[in-house]
Each structure stands twice: as structure tokens, then as C-alpha cells.
Length: 359
Image (cartoon, rainbow, N blue to C red; front, side):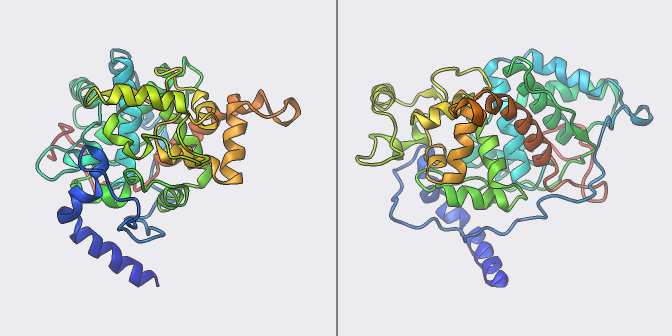
């Protein structure tokens, strides 16, 4: 069975270029047919080992042996200059990097048919912030700090800033930069476009990277920041009748009017759009979310219970005030855990001089 699944993955990869437009219709092309099955095997086998048990990462990696003691400070200073939108983009950039080829900076590579050119990545932001931090690092410590670690540090610093300091964690570092970046790999490893992103599929994709369903619910909280194009949720407008996960009518009406004006970006969280907080979970419960993958968190007792916990909607004795505080810590843990996906060693990677190009 495992061999058959692997053959199915290879077959779908070979056909990725030809079916790219039809698969990613939700990214600005014709509306997809929800009656067609998503073309990838289920469950998904990992494209690489989800987490190396001994990848050589350690907290304080660059202060150890005086490698580059000011590395994290330099990255933090670059992030502090970024806009709220760029900071939100840095968190998303880390996720998109780690899920494809592992946390190796492959998403940063420029060129034809690289990850950066794939439909799911066309709206990524934060590249300029990473480049600025890397340039400063090369002046201070040439050839020492990997681009993969810069992305990891920057996502932590962006989380700290957007959460008003409630999220702050130590980042294990020592990653090497990968040398491979293929657009087709994004379709096999990133969550699918609408309307395919149901709970089972999203859970399977996270499991393929060594992340649990709870990790998926926790990390989904990052949808409390950032903006999304109207073409990213065509399956949600107009809201489906008699559906327990359909978008809340008032929000749906507002978005219909806004999106009908043309191709525009709208906040993913209409209440606190520039704050990384638990408002996302309250939005899920009130059906004020853009994506089906978010709305589907209420379709399972396990995930709905966790959403209610983080939202602070439980009774006092069941964690009404504990949940919102706990989410900050769980988000920290999940980000660190995600940072171990597919880590490259010195034999597999390099320390790039410029993040957009291999040496």
C-alpha cells in the first residue's frame, strides 16, 4: 500500500505542470469544481522525514564558540523596521518554507520554476526584510548565518511584535540552506486551494510533516493576521444554504460587495487584523472566517473543543481564562516543532551568501 501511495505521488508530481491551472483555480483562475476529488493521494506520505531526531539544532547556536553573537539582534532590528503586513508575511514565509523541502530557505530562491514562482507563493511577503537582515549579517559575520535561520528568527520576532510581546520563544538554530527549489513541490506539500481544504485533508498534510492535529489548530491561529485576495475563497461566497460552516451572512454580504469591486485584498481577521491573538478562534466559532479550512475546525468534536478553549468560551471552571493564555505558549511550542521539519546538514546544504541564489 505504501508503495502504491508513493507511485501515486510521483505520478501526480509529473502531472503537476499540466494540471497547475486547474488545481489552483482558487488562486485567481476559473472556479474549481468541488465535486471532483483532490488529485493527490490520501493520506499524504511525507516528501522527506518530517523531523530529524538529531538535526544539530541548538538554542544560542550563534553565540556558541563566538560564531556570530549578534546574529539574532541583527535580524530583530530588521524585523522591527517592517510593516505589520510584512511581519504577518514573515510568519507565513516560515510555514511555506518548512512545509516544502523542509526549513532550508528554499522558498527564498529566485529563478524559473522555483517555489517562489508557484501559485500558492505568489502572495508571499517579507523577502525584502530577509534580504536586509542577511546583508547586515554578511557584513558582521560573513558566511556564518544561514538564510534558513534568518527566516526562523524573523518569524519569531514578527510573532513577538504582532502579539505585543505575549509570544516569545528561543529558536534552536544551526540550519543549512538547501540547494533545491521546485514549484511543483508546493502542490504536494502545502494545504490545497479552496474548496478542497477540509479538516481531514488538512490534518493529513500536517501529519505528513510530523505535526499533530492539535498543532494544526494552534498554528491556524496565525490567520488572525495578514490579508488575503478575494480569489482565495471563491467557494465561500455566497455562503452555502443550510450549512453549519457557512460564512456569517453579514460578513459574507460585506465581502461580496468588496470583492465585486475587483481584485482586492481583505483582512483575514476583521476584528483585530494586525494582532496575533485568539480573536481568530472567536471568529471560527462565529463563522467570521474566510477559508473553509478554518470553518471546518468546528466539524470535529476534538478540534471544536480546542477552538472553544483557546477562544475563552468555556465556563469558568473549564478554563475560560486559561485557554487564551495557553494558546500563546502552545503557539510558541508549535513554531519550534515546525522548525525541525526537514532540517539540512552541512553535507546536504550550504550557507548562502545571498538568500535568493545558491553559492
